[in-house]
Image (cartoon, rainbow, N blue to C red; front, side, top):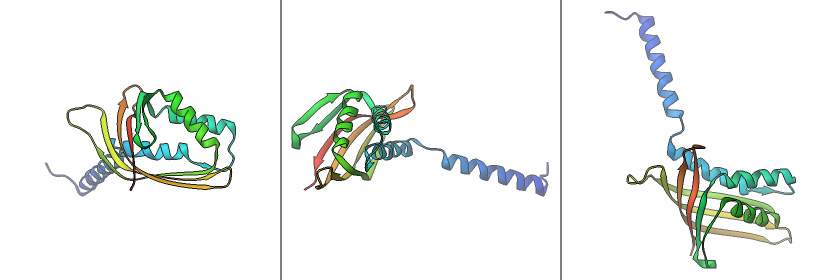
Length: 168
């Protein structure tokens, strides 16, 4: 069987399109990283925002939290599990005291343990810059360890366990 020049070019174009589709499909690591981008967007604030925007951000944040998320920050004596609505309320209250908030995640290292299905272990850094309503500025940086689990129903990655460490 002999392939014509047009058939060969068509086959080549088809393979190129397939390769591009596969390359740009979001793999699980990209999806986990996008979860951190989404958290940064939901915590960010730039001036006054309407109540519906605040409510939407709280709802979006609660959708990224597993039904019981454990949060540990030894520096402030925190070592508890929370439900999504409680954490979303805490974030909303924190945001209410700030005029501007920027959250930046960096140096993310994502690992998928072979012995656990739909689990991602993430190490990284987080920086928060905030301008308080009373006029002072706050800049904090921390390292963290996070465990995310994939919710099969919604096909989203959710925070299950987070440990925050002070940067020296």
